[in-house]
Image 1 (cartoon, helix red, strand yellow):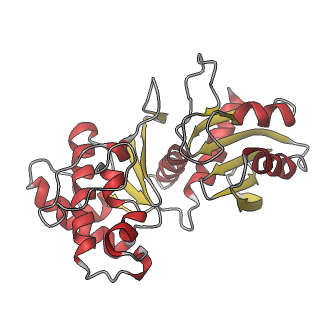
Image 2: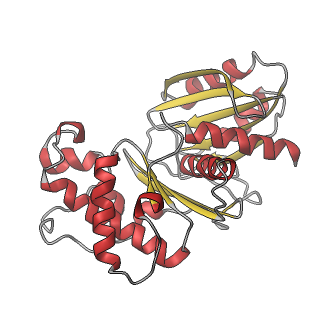
Length: 292
C-alpha cells in the first residue's frame, strides 16, 4: 500500500510516498513558487504511482479545516504572495482521480508524527504539543490521537507574552500583533534586532536568553492549560543548547507550582530528525483517511 505526503511550506514543498509501515520509498522537494506551478509539480510526482491509496497534506496557512465550509481545503488569508484563497485540496483531488486527502496544518502534521512515534516507542503518552519555531511560530496539539481545534486550528504563535525588561524597545515583527510570541522569537527577529541571521549569533549573546524567556512562557501557558505529556520544539531556531536555556527559564518561571518530571524528557526536540516529523505524521494521517 502506497501513502502520500505533501509537506507544504512557504519556502519549499516536500512530497513523498511511503508504505503503511511509514517507510519512505521516494521523496522530492522543490521551491514554493506560484500555486499553479507548485501544485502541478505535486501532481506530476504522485501521478507516477498507480497504487496510491491516500495523501495527507500538512500545509502552511492559515487554512480552512471545517468540512462544512465552502472553503474547506483552501489556504485562506495567508501573507504568502499569490497563495491567498488557493483551493489546495480541490486541485489535488481533481488531478489525481479524487484520491482521498487528509488536510491539516504543517505543524499538526509534525505533532502527529511525534505522537505516533511516541506511541511506537511505548512512551504511553495521551497528549503532546509540538511547537515549530522558524520563519514563523505555530503549534499543534494532539490528545488521544485527535487534533485540538473545532472552529479552526490553534494559532499559538500569536499569544501574548510578558516582555523581557531588556527587550522593551523592540516592537516585534508580526504584521498583525507586533510583539506576540511569533513577533518576538521567529527566526527573522534576529535580523530585526541585530541585522544578522540567527546562525551568525553566538549562543552567549543575550538575545538568546531573551527569546528563551518568551518561549518558556509559552511552554508554561501550555503546561498550565493543557497539562500535556510532553512538549516538543522543532524548527530552525531550536537547538539542544538553546532548548537548555528554555528549560532553565521554564523552571524559574514555574517555580515548582506544578510538577512535570524531568525537564529533559518533558521539553524535548523532535524524535524524528532532519525535519521528518511531518512526513511521518502525514503517512499515518493518510492511512487513517484511507481506512475511514
